[in-house]
Image (cartoon, rainbow, N blue to C red):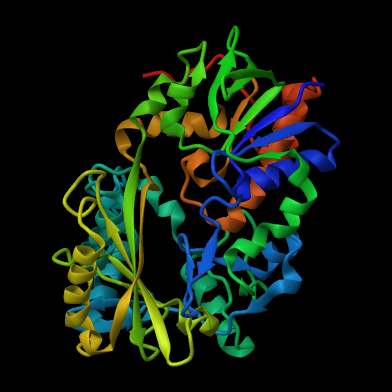
Length: 457
């Protein structure tokens, strides 16, 4: 059998590789970079500060599945807060203690509205006041689009229903662990599923999987093209050389697929799909606990950032004793004012904004720990291509071509859901290359390929 090409060696690509190996199917993992992991990587600087590329939420269940349970340590506390009107409120229950929010939410239950946009969804879910003061400003900051332009499907990324959230919050208090709430939609969360963090950084999480499939990983091997014939994947081109394959599994952002998949126009509509570029600014400070909780949401549109995270509140080892690190999330567009700012300019505007929230911030500031710019941080669910997004969630429309991972699926999913959804997709791939009928892939709960439904504009 010809090998299956896997494009990318992040958590999705490596999970797919291990699942294929355990089925006895041949594959090659092509990774454009010099190392595995993708955004699931980290480094520790000479002063003892640890930096993760991106926010990672790892459950003990996922760590065990990846074979990394023995190197992970339990996170005892994790919480979120919202800064509003000069005060910080725990999320979500602290906000709901404000009468104007609770009353508006109650009115919405009595007089529900039709839901056509994300704005409608937020008003229906939280009430008009909370939606317009908190949820909508935050969504527009991280998406770069108005809530009226967005599909109500953005609500799928949020956590469990209120009763389940109350149960999980109570479980966290009783067990004295950071019980997961809203971090896996594919598998049910319970009191026994809690946050963990690998000793030595997030990059270690994938070490057991990489060791199992490492002989099939090709680093610094960018796939230049996926070649098709009669709407069927036949080969990939790497370094100018064509390699015959039986299927291709991509983790790349979906909007680049029309550029790299040759011989078909069925993916042309994907070029319109947008991702939100982001800048992550890491600043070092003296002290610990500058923020009211691990993550602080900022719905104030006058600020350049919409979220600040102080990870050492939850994982003390990520900063030296008596010091901390804050990460500022800035939504932007490639080439705009923020994207083109120098690191020192970004530091200055983050410190200026932080000073309104934490008055002692300037005195505690040590230095900039690094700035990360990524052109594809979050998928943007615009209503104008919602029908294409839903179709793509079922099939790429090209025989033997599959997409996995957050960017590859164009989905608001976190690490554990990436794992479960990748395993389901591999069931489809296996059925395809083994010549089984399409319904064989349905046992995983994923739709089968439907090549007669192109995703064209």
